[in-house]
Image 1 (cartoon, rainbow, N blue to C red):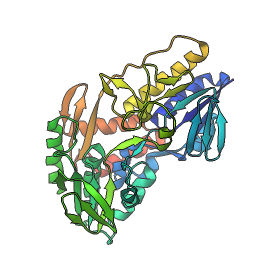
Image 2: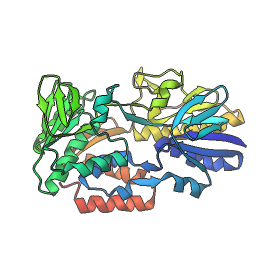
Image 3: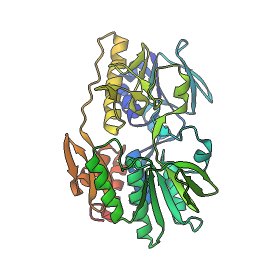
Image 4: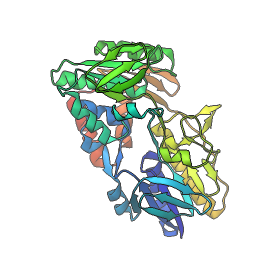
Length: 377
């Protein structure tokens, strides 16, 4: 019996786990995660607006593992000893024959501890609920979102949606250090998002960065300050902290560089947001579709490694991406073609329902979307 440890119970990790269950008669499986839940990250912005109940975007990892007869360890990974083939956690060390690192990503504060201590993030459901509870608080005059990428645009729209639903007028300000929203994507998408957020009366400040946050005051690089501010930091993500200690090749986002088989050595695979896979000379972008696809390849190659069969190369198929904004507005690329409007919103939530981890969650998402009239508002 070969011992297999999977670090991370996200899309990639659970895909690997579910597929390896087909070979459970020859494998001893253990899932390690510092959280106790799988959170459906694409719907976290919808939690801010109250559109989808948090009950339907989360599943218990201990319950999932127990139902499948898999060991679960709720602990943070501190390091990995590749020579001894051991994963060292806060609660002890675990031996493995094969290891899968699918530890995902986390908010990047770029080493600024002060900003990290004085702002909220959107890494998981706990973060989303904690921030949502503060939005309507009288302690804050405005909600400030730092970072105008995917998450920042979606968060700004959903916060405005929530404020409108409770008839509360409060400033929502989006800060982006470049000169346009959705930097790195095609320019028309940035312009589309700009017009959509303007209709929601979201204020936007471009070409400045945040120097510091203290006592609920945001200090901008142009000398301006925003007082009594509730801050949500969405200015980028990176690999989780323990990756920096592994002495493995990584990219500037602390994502581990992998080969065509998604391996870093004979006994270790890496997938999902934790993996930096070269795609036409650049790291493949993060995305649920790639995490799931990599999970499938990793599970197949792990079994093939045990059987000493030739390994499969990972060949990404990019179905596209969308940025749902609301009120029938969204933009993106679908099968290589530009797409915008209600069809984008529909496809986004259709895929969310399809990817949901349980039938209960699928039904809950549908009810929330129908009740909230997401395609119409």
